[in-house]
Length: 299
Image (cartoon, rainbow, N blue to C red; front, top):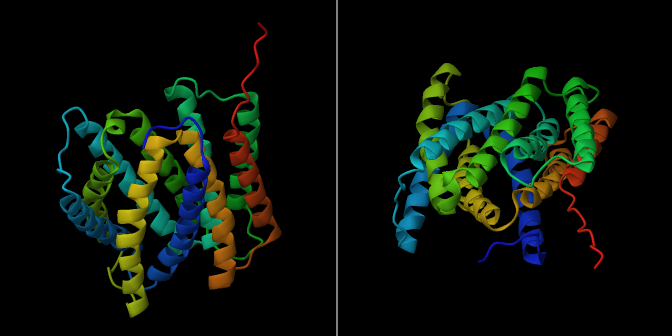
């Protein structure tokens, strides 16, 4: 599929579906953390994804080759991926899904700031600057407010670290030498490097097994097969076709959906401050990624 300069109907539908998957993913992580230590859970997820992606490559007849000139970027993106999910899984262990999601899905804010300095023709305009201010204000409200009686300050900060890690991962996939390799190989770098790092880090976070039940095993398998192996390959494929800012703009749907799923499935309380934070982040992301109208030139 050829590269696009803007999001078309297929891209909009695909990114909306992916946003729903990511929102539900937050609930799955929260529930599965009840049976598995979060960092160990993240490490096993990456290790399982290595096997799934390898089987996918074998089935499709795609050679598992790491091109020269891409290995430093591949190792770097794997390290950042490990940091991102160490933070996210800890965040969802300490704070509510609704709070973590509002903060985590501020990723386009940090991606826009990075793109301003790294990607030509992707500068921060006055409209983007307004969006950044609104979204950052929303993140600050989400971290500092406690009217829902849930979460912890450290859990919220971990979600912020995960958001920044996700933005760095997306930037490396788009602007480094990894941009010329297949999405499956990009993801193999991410899970292949992160798996041993996370499993080693898990040694410092307590017992690996908590109160393990079948639902937790189902959650782990869902993470490995559906979210990481299929979902992330699909997202990286979309990122290789559509503009990075356009892909990122649809992430504003995920916190909205995640807050709703947290309330519906987990019974989480949604206070007025969190609603205000969610609105500011969503509006800010929309402004950041609003396409510029081309100016007509007089002839």
